[in-house]
Length: 89
Image (cartoon, rainbow, N blue to C red; front, side, top):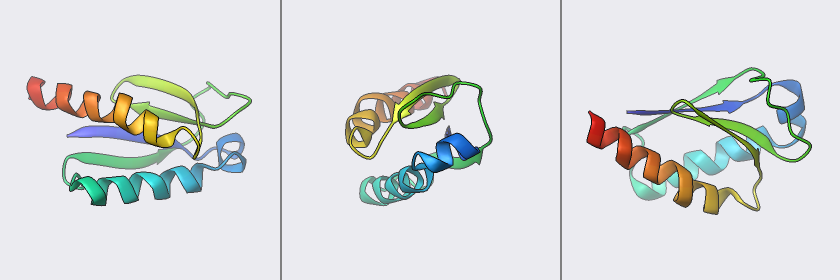
């Protein structure tokens, strides 16, 4: 299982963490991945960025995730990380 943590600290919350959570939930349903990716909230990861939300995928931290770049992030980062975690399992 791949763990994804979405920052819900005050800075990320203001920048749209709730919308990113909703996008994740939608994508997981769309791809049937609800049992393969665990989404949780986290408080500040100390990587605050001027734009977007901080998301941790496995052990990697990504900053600047927005609703505009979410689909690219999901396809280019999350899905490959899931594939890698499945190969390691």
